[in-house]
Image 1: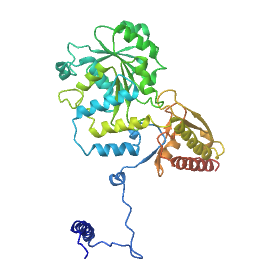
Image 2: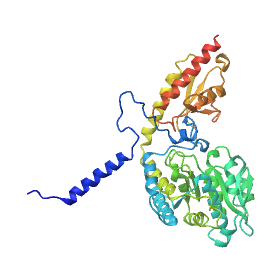
Image 3: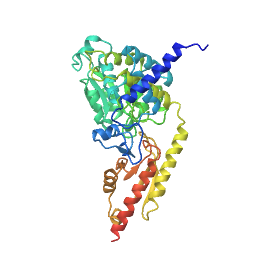
Image 4: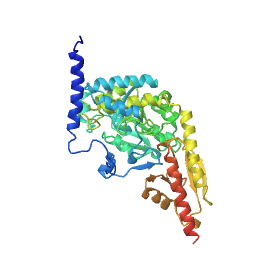
Length: 415
């Protein structure tokens, strides 16, 4: 006699019941496509729903252009992080410890971008771990109140340092720097992108800071790749170094890294969110971004960067082949010396003969479909582009569009 397995049958029944319920919920809708029936319109992505136009990024990792794209494993980690509660400080300390170990630096923390790292690094040098002082910022009465910076290193992002209430003391020569240091000096700020423009280079800057006991800060936001830079500047002697998380590292755009001396990182954490009466409270980095930054860095350190570089060069070759098929269009390649240190392609042509300026060419690229944004005068190379932030295959679209623009312009100019 067959034995009735209630447990097994119950599971099957419930499974079928779930299916029937789901089908019942589709009442009024066809379950199967019928010949001649209208097709269901494709689901719009979130930007289409919002009416916001997407772009092909042939520029670099500009915040205005939303940085970089998250790799799938980073997005998955952030989604997983969103499903649980943790103590934020415990997570920040755990991730900071892992990052410091991975990079071989003294200590680390995840910040709200490189700008957040600049502000928190400054706050750490001004208020330290003193709770009363932390709660008073940006009132720096009785605290060290000056940050020394070279004139050639002034930049819009030093506003993040000024947020703390300090006064920037601008110098040009090594002698002026030495003379500017006093009991009021809280920090010395170095902009890595400007290292070849200032009269005081990396080594001398560090040496002066060490000799006077003043913490040195290096804003290296976009200085990855190469991956070695993530630890090079700390090992060189900088007390604090800031990187953007949403640029070459391809982490969350609203995340960054502050790396350096353990006592200063501990002070930066005390000046930061989630501490409520602190200048860094608005610089919130959620559990999703902290985890995403960790996984992005973990991934980046495993990437075959030589293969990645060869891929960029090959993709530039696709664009190069397309545009040089138009008589009169020439190309050359270059790699920026410091920030966004990746292969770029520069395009040159006789603007008078083509009746097409570089600015107009860039405008046509951006106004077309799909919209493509490139570099115009950014590196004094005229019109240029890079596959650094392009999706695979987009180089063919860029090459085809440029060829169309140049061909049309040449034809019109010829009458």
